[in-house]
Amino acid sequence: MAEPAPVENEEEESDEGVQEHLKDAVAGTLKLKRLLSEGEDFLKKVGSSIKRRRTVERCGPAEQAKVTHLLTKWGALDDVLLRHVLEGLTIEELETLNASGYLPDKFNAWKSCADLTAMHIAGMRERNTAGGGALDAIAAFRFNWKLDGTTDPILRKLCHKDLRYVLTHYDGVKELASLIQEAVDSEPDATATGVASTAPGCTALGRFNRLELIDAEADAAVFGDANLSFALNLVRHRKALGHVGRVIATTFESLEVLRERYSEIDETIAELEKHFSEVYHEVDCTRIAVHAQFKNLERSLGAVYYNFPHAGAVGGFFDGHPLVNWRHENLMRLFFRALRAYVQPGGIVKVASNQGAVGVRYSYIICSAVENEFRHIETVPFLQWSLHRYGRSYGDRRDTYRRPDEGEGYNVQRAEKDMVYVFTYEPSGQPLPPQDIRLPPTFRTIEACPDGPFDGMTGESRKNLAKQLYRRFMLECSGTHVG
Image (cartoon, rainbow, N blue to C red; front, side, top):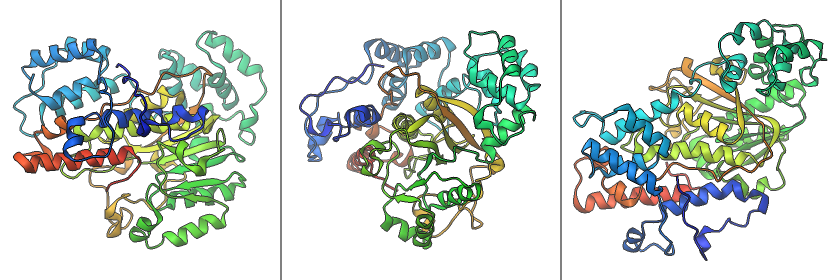
């Protein structure tokens, strides 16, 4: 996908004064704001103070030609929302889609062609992943290195010491048999101190991620913790293990909003601070480089947690709808890009989510991590995680009058499908290309939406709703939570 044309002398396009080595951490959010603010005609009509900007190319000429070809082939040249979905694909994905013979069902009574196509594309991508279910260390290792099934029984026979050595030192070049012999002759890894080196390898490695045996001296950060109950759970756990690293607990909302939703929030914060934790509010995990609280914290985090990420519900739309789903995918892409400056090499990142989620899909988590050099090392069933018992919340206005842990369950998610996706940061030392993002809709695309809250709307009411949604997207890209 083509990069946006450079914007000159644009005050709003600045990197907000971040240090030079952190500019890459915010470049993606600035790109997203540029793409959203390209509707100059719309901005004039609503009297926006945003300056005129150079029009941004949403995709290159090759992609645009392929998009037009597909729309012509499907008899859907006038479907603005379907064009939006296709414009977000790479040329390889467009060619695969064309060759597959896929044809959206125009007569589906429940979903539009754009919605059906977006779901089909998500399925195409997920077939190239290891899946969203439980995945132990050996299965993840085999998938990462594209090893065949003959290696599985060999690796599963290794003891903890030897398996840890193989997983750490394998480079895809040396013969696995030679590396296993090296492992047999090696001394136990210092990070495995206190764990029986002769224990079954896969089981012993799995205990580290289930029992939260992380670096005792490194700091840990928790993002998106609505009522801070998970952070409190982590603090107590680390204290019991004798860890000295501090916990940095963050919320997306302001303290005032939290007090409206959670009557216990001040008490929770007081206990966190009693355990020498730091609590920060109004922290956007995709823009931590612009938060003063994170100044000088580069390479200090040994563990990072983000439980059940969500970009916020939009009334009238399901989370998977293409008009709103781009927010969920970009949340993960920008989150992992932002973390690169703050996580130590070898540090652990854990993102909990439901494997059937249609907002933040498991593939968004895994693929975004891999794009940013966070290697997927295991997927742990959430209920097997030692930190799974905390006060779950919705993270929005619903928490004022009901909570999931007070007899109010998530009616679209099954607890046994909740997973913890575990990654370790392995930077190559080489600069990465600019962070790609999923395209946001233009104002014209929003206004042309055929379903959701737009169903049956015409004239000024449709235009006004489109303006409201457009403004909301602009606010969210600036780090303001709506909902």
